Image: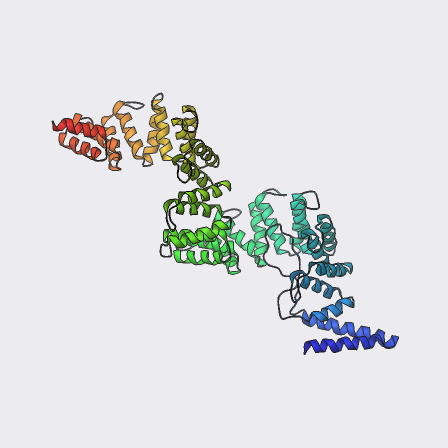
Length: 558
């Protein structure tokens, strides 16, 4: 019925054009009135601009929202009669492939016609077409020209797009200060995305002095206009305590608001809050639910986190196979932590057949993306010849890359290679340097090894590092500290203290400490002499393969 009405209307229009000049003049006025009325009615289903959530510094076009199919032919007739809004709407339809086949060339044609009549939205969209090279050769300079025209007509999206251009240095000399100025103009006129980007600038200190409080203010303003990115960033601000007092409860509140608007990163963060019990009662099942929602939207970190939940059996039945499936999806989406996790799965044979070659392959992919743990694991694979030919030189190479990325385990491993002269020339000075870096990063075994390096020339420093390691629960360091007390090296000799540390180490399964306790009971140092207890401790050490303990037991049995 609608197409028939349009056909009859078209025939009537032709009849008026072939009538007398008076008929033509009054007919034209009548047609424009009718078509304008039709366009007003159609505007209920073709409302003005609304696009999906945008990333920071992406230029934005403007268009019509989805709704009941508009009568494209009515728009076309009105456009041909000079109605700029209809020209613009036709441009949007061709641009987005809404109600017509997508055709960027035709979109540009209609945008250009509307822009020539002073249509601000059309001028902005024409700028976007030049920016992206859609329907025209890419030309950032021409894009700037059209953004300027639209901005001069008060179009806030064009102001925002100009800000993006200055931020990226596309079509203009890069100028973050100018970008901020333009974002501010658009923001003050109510543009939510500009408010959000202004918040980002204050957070990073780009184009303005860094000011988390002002960032929070702009995020809040944008969030009040239902901008999900701003809601998410408010959650981050409360999580980190940037610009506001740290408040995990409020962080959860804003993550939830953004998540309910379909924001995948917010869903992931909300899942994390449930997993860790920050701002909410810890609930692994709720964590899994939010991770799954984000993962189904293609969010790689959520996929990896969901894999972790299956790997650890948190909120779901432990299932290594499903864990690997999610790790793989995330890894194939470029998530380096998932690549590393997939490498671990192959190395251990959890959820997949053990395959050191594939483990090495995934470690390499993650390491090349700057994943410190993966680089350290890759070094280990080369050191042990797992999945690759044994190569101490390459092991050192990857340990060094990992260490330079701040990985304490790699620092320790690099110190060990220098101490042993494996893959590098033996160099105790370099060994000490790397052990120290690892120790200062909290690596307990490195603290003990650093103590050992000082044990020959600086007893007090040796004691210092043995003590630090021992107090953090390292059994070998406890035994070494006991030895320093027994011999009076770096401390006043104290057999009772020696026994105390040997006892602690022995209870943690250290066979050297067990042997030393046997000696102390045999000689009555720090304890009453007790041959029965001496034999007991020698036996425990011998059971763990301690050769001197075995020898002492043999002597005692003669």
